[in-house]
Length: 208
Image (cartoon, rainbow, N blue to C red):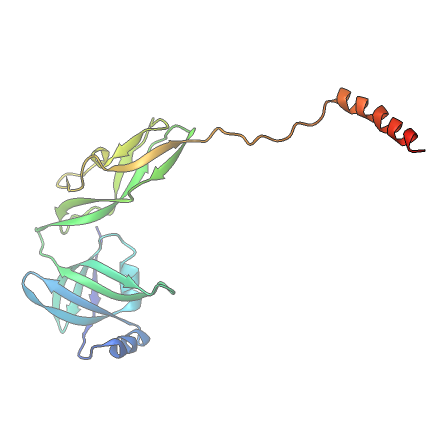
């Protein structure tokens, strides 16, 4: 998994006004907490933080006033209109300690082409060492037939990673394609069209 060093500053002003000023300066308000330590209110550079968060479950070595804390993103808030980072909570972790995290699940293999693959759950919860969290996990759908599913228990787990989610939770389901065809009015047969023509001519003659 990715581990990135990012340098921030201590926040001394709080409230909505102070947060807006930080964001205008290209900084993201953040809180670092955990392991019995008092929460630290800091500001991190938006561009570097945004790039780091593109990696799932990235570890952040946050440097504040010359001291480094190893952290894991816990909660990320974004502006609902722009999607820009607005706030982040970081939990302190220690090397060698095991943590519970949500990890994305990707599919591998070829399923029945007559089915439509639905991702019921994009992530599952696992436990792993803080410095060995997989970027993603895989579930093999090779030969999966329409109407069948793969569960969390079918997901391939690397050594040292254990499943926390219920093993029976459906991760992907292969739905059957609809075979219904909309009915359209049938075109009149050539014989019927031919019979209708003389009748129309008779009607014209009667009106003379």
